[in-house]
Amino acid sequence: MSRPVAAACGVLVVLAASGAAHATDWQSALFGDRGGRLPKSIHYRAHVADRSQQVHSVEAWREAERLRRSSDGVLDLYAARTVSGVSTVLVDKRSGQVVRGDQGSLLRAGHVEAWSELAYVLVRPAGKFDLMRAGRPKMVSGTSCQPYRVVRGDGTAFTFCWSARLRLPLEINTPDGREAFAVDFVEERRVPDRIFLAPDPTTTDYTDQD
Image (cartoon, rainbow, N blue to C red; front, side, top):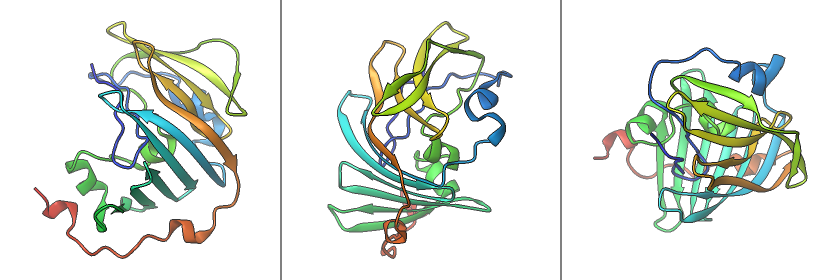
């Protein structure tokens, strides 16, 4: 059984089980007729717990085709959706290192696999599972979200509260009830272009690293 994972630069939380895909209403329940289209732009701050339960701060700016995510104020991930997948620039402010990657190289390095994982944070679980509403909508950080419960084929479960308007989970809890991810502040507003301008890479590609 996998556990929530906080990926490089932040907030990627994966709660998944192994096995063959199971037809469910995941897409229609969470994205509806809009097919997963994002709001024009959002800005949010959140905290996420890693495997050792260390809490990290995350700040993110997201548009339909581009995103920037800052983790603990020291790692910045710039991502853009392309025809071939995702292109990224990862900036380590502590060392001054700037690294360019793409979807394939990031996957091999164990980081981001797809744009949906960056944009939506919550990844559709693999394997057999049931998705069900878990109560009435509630407010989290001033925004309404619908609680959901996911029960896997092995009986384990996790919960999250989904904002259909923002296309973002406002909180995610692990099977043992611990908080894995929570949004502290979120707003819909135009993001200045300068926020998405990444430095020019000056080091090697992920594909050149061991």
